[in-house]
Every structure is written in structure tokens, then in C-alpha cells.
Length: 317
Ligand code: AMP
Image: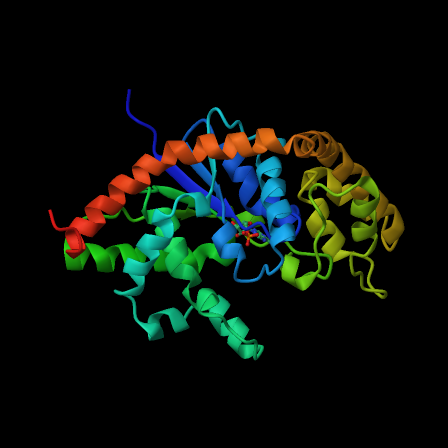
């Protein structure tokens, strides 16, 4: 039997998971768990670029772990682990730093956005794409399912693999981004990309009231008949063949449409919420799952780093 192709992706433990994470990336993890050999990690070292409260970070790590399992990821089929448990990711990122130029990384959107907003940028934020390249390349990923905001980072990972391979000989596979066009950028309640940093999210595991409050806050045009942003989010939960007549019959009746969205969302979200809350009540079990996952991938990562150390010349034999 041909061996399965490998899938690698991760989620940052910063704040609560939202519908953008779920429809843009996590649904793909779920749909592909049989087809690919999947490695899903919690990107805790990436989170350090914005998370400065240790207790909150620890809590968010458990929440992402619970979130993966609550949506239906089976830890027996998929390897779940914490990025910081595999120190080879950061070690490889250092090697990549040394073959990458500053102007190349200055082209990254995340850096340019932060600069445009006059934010104080940490070296970690600037260097984020190198750690992400290491996260992916160290396992020889074939595919990386992500939302569109991560597309450029996958291109940077590919470029970095090519640069390393041409300097030191074939070592890294070039990964492909898997982006679902219809959910490439899930909009938030204000119509911009849903993002924790824009404070426009609808929580994936929030209580029914929290979800309802967020939906009631979706921005609508007071003059128009068609609430575009409500529709865009509703589409995630119900087919357009059913939505079009519903929206046609309720022109300008935003309240009824938002209530219909809340009811449709609740059908999908409530079973996952229940599972999520149950999983979070046994943190020792979540920790066990992550430790078992890191033990599985550690060997792969350390083999690759041995090869890299030999190729660059720091290994003496
Ligand atoms: P992050 O929370 O930045 O670690 O993102 C985890 C995953 O969710 C990444 O693959 C992102 O591309 C994806 N994602 C985050 N927000 C959105 C969004 N609004 N639409 C589509 N995908 C998203």
C-alpha cells in the first residue's frame, strides 16, 4: 500500500478560536484526517510574539488542544503536539535565518502591516516566517491547509526550501498550500477578515448567548434591503439554495435573518461546544495527548536536524 502524503498545520494559542479558524483551516484538518498522515500542532512559540501573560497562554494552549478534538479530530489518527516541545523547530529556524536576507523578510505582509501601523515590531514578529518554514519543512510536509492570510508564509517556506536545497543539496520537500476558495477569508462582524486582533470574531466555542450577541452585532447597512455581512456568515452554515429564498422573503428584516443565523449556527456549534467543555474539564488528559504526540514526531524532527547539521558543516562526523 502506498504511504499517505503528509499534512502539517498549526494554530496559535492566542485568544479564543473563532469561525474563521474553523471554516478557513480546521474543517480541512477534519476532512483530511483519513487521507493524509496529519501533524497538527499548537503554535505556542509563535504566540509569544503577541501573548505576554503566561497564565493566559497556558490556558489558551489547553483550549486549542480541546478545540482540535472537539471538532472531531481523532488523536489516534492525527498527531497533536505542542511546537515548543520539539526544540528542533527553533533550531532549524536559526539555520534558515542564516540563509535568508532582511529585504526578503521585509516583503512579508504581516511585517509590512505592523510597520504601516507604526507598531513596535519584535525580532520574533519579523522572523515569524522562518519559524513557520521550519515547522513545515522539518517534517517534509506535502500539504499545508490554511486560510488565505497564510498563503504568503507558505510561499516563503517554499523559497527557503529551494534556497537551502540549492546551497547544500536536496534536503527539503516543497509544500503546497491548501486553501478553500469559498472560505479563504471568512469575514468578521464588520465585514473585514475575521481576526482576534480586529475584535470582530464570532467565537467557535462561545456560549449560545455569546454567539447570539456577536451575530446581533453584525454590521448592516441601514438603507439597504440585503444584509450582506449577515448573509456571508450565514452561508457558512446553510446552502445558498435555501438562503436565497429566505433572504428574499425577509428583505430589510435584519432581526429575523440574524435570528435564523443564530438558530442555524447553534445546530452546528452546540454539539462541539459540549464536547469542548467536557475536554477542558480534564486537562491532565489533554496534556497526555500532547505528550504522546510530541513523542511521535520528535524522532522525525531530530533525524532531519541531524541531516541538516551534517549538510551545513556543524556536525563533525
Ligand atoms: P491563527 O489563529 O492565526 O493561528 O490561524 C489559524 C488558522 O486559521 C490559519 O490557517 C489561518 O489562515 C486560519 N484563519 C484565521 N482567520 C481566518 C479567516 N478569517 N478566514 C479564513 N481562515 C482564517
